Length: 378
Image (tube, rainbow, N blue to C red; front, side, top):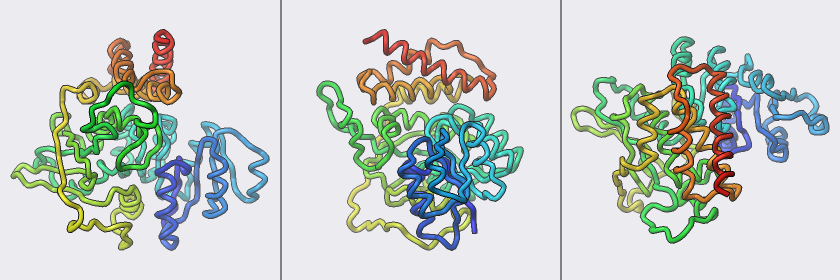
């Protein structure tokens, strides 16, 4: 029996994780769940899974009284506590942004296995996280379908056998379509394959999601940027490929369903014989792969973030997060997101060596700067 804590239980990844647990009750127990403010959803999760610990950002005594016997945790200390529960075997990190950076560091120091679905943690603190994971002998298991695929394809492969890895991308809602005029919010959020939260769906449309995935792959697999590439694959059947030095290519194929990589992570190093959905290749048709334009801003920003490290990826992530938020609020156009991010990154005071506290301050600075610039444009 594995005891699981889910940071972000009310989001897409969190709810998919609970669905995997729902089908494997004899193997998994939910001992802790955490959300920001969505008490309506988390109430139903408490009723069904009866976790001993529940984190909510701010205390709600009336809500607490509905669930006697449940220990409620709040604030920064509470988030750290639920991420380091003595009984926990694996911590699923599925909270967008860097809010869980400190709790994940604490969990690593307590030698908890990390199921990582939050790109931002490695993007802003990759050197810190990977160094700590080595020091404490902790496994960081990627949940994102692309990195999970690469993780599987690289099992048993020696470092000197790797020529290149390929991250695949559906291309988002606008690939192959000539946009006329400004892109509306509904158009941007109409992802052709995946059902995701609004923020990551916007990132998919700008391709910044792939920029962050390149950075994440660099840290997860200790590969230089020139050995990490991206291919547009509209069918989203192949999630990642590894090209070996002898020309052999290993790819991971599966139906586009996040429960598949989540199940792999929860059961690792074993596989569960429960299959969510098979691919019928007799009906799948042709699979297409197209190169991305490496001159695109998102691609060059990813490469620069890997080369520079330090404050660069922190500001990149913070600026993008706020730019997306501003777009979702109707403060800027979709077409302004990338240019706003680049302007902030290009004009920040770069620092090579930064601490966790400095990461948090830089993230806040980047977000404030994005608001300032967006305000000037209105």
